[in-house]
Length: 224
Image (cartoon, rainbow, N blue to C red; front, side):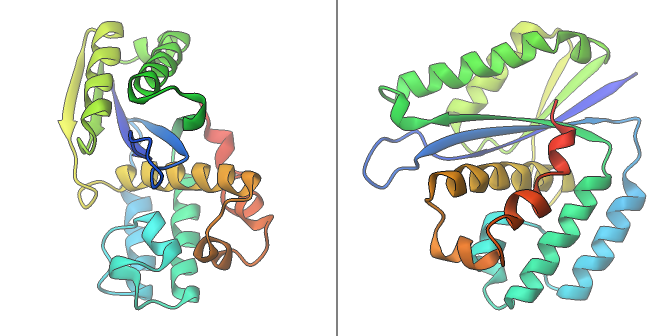
């Protein structure tokens, strides 16, 4: 049976208050399960352990902002982690797609949900041939936000007959961490263009053009 894995992560919130996010992004990472990734994962694990034996999960945002379990790492160590993960993703036989919505263009919570749903449905319909080339589609999401959970169930169930939904933990799947990386960097790219990068985000990149040219340019070739 030919199976397609879809790993999904999001960035943003559904509130519209003063402290709410400016954007909402959803990133979907697609992997044909016939393509073996074990050799790449083993090499990545070795590189991560050279930086820190205590690091198991690559969580892009906290690494860049020096938060949580990465707070004691130097900027060089944190950049080593991101560079290693970037080269890992570059070699992966995957495709991905990101939906990005500027929230100030939405009227309210319901309008934001509606726009995201329409964009996800439009993407699924426009790539039916790709999805239908697989016998089964397995959707992995951490159920972080109920709106996204409902949206995924609705859109994928309507468009595809053989769909399975699984709850995922970041620790369990490197490909879920890949969706986090891609979602995070697509947001950083948008924020840089808008001139809204935080101080910590600016400090992580040695040159302004590094964000796009070093961390995203090659990966954009994987966009579906």
